Amino acid sequence: MIKYIRISLGILFFMTFLHAKSQIGDFRNELAVGVTGGYTMSSVGFVPDIPQNSLGGYTAGVALRFTCEKYFKSICALVTEINITKTGWKQSILDAQDQPVINPSTGAAEEYQRTITYIQIPFLARLGWGREYKGAQFYVQAGPQIGFYLNDKIKSNYDYDLRNQSDRLGVLQESPQEVMPIERKFDYGITAGAGLEYSIPRVGHFLLEGRYYYGLADIYSNSKKDFFGRSNLSVIQIKLTYLTDLIRSKNPNIK
Image (cartoon, rainbow, N blue to C red):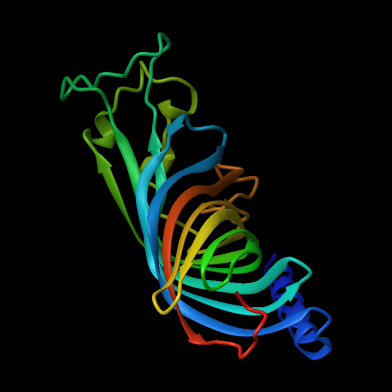
């Protein structure tokens, strides 16, 4: 899968090079940098299935945008970010009557979640429509993303060896994921989003975006002898970004 990510990045940069050389559209040479952050809702696609609720977290980092061309009415750009992101899963531990499973040792409903922290780096191709320097712009962007595991943290209100196995359903009776360490530390997948940008001259660009990430890698080994055949991340993000211009084109057509 790594080679497909490399090919995708190569295509993106090659297209940018062609745009700059051919100048088929209205040429740009805009570079903006800034900060980005937001709220995340994540889960893990386990096979066999583990019932879950979305785990809330955050993402924060820096962003870089290179705008290369306006082709007809579409503003073309490349975007990359370096983010620290909290992902993971939160189990829904219910019995056959869809009621919370009570732990006999504590007398409380069993709760378990694991938060996994990554450095995530998306590489995005972006198309925008609207104003560039003063006013609003709608945009969509998509591309590959890689992630590097930093650490993980378990939050549970019961001891694993004293969990209520008899009232749990299906795979949750075994629950090896509750104690298994994260086995695969490198993550990769596809991300896409859409948002609104509002630009103020001499102040900067303010962006609000919704984004979805689908992992193509697994956090656990998935051979025939392993317990899980699939264990990939799925993340929804609501992001706010502020960008300021470092390089601006001397182009009278930019508004």
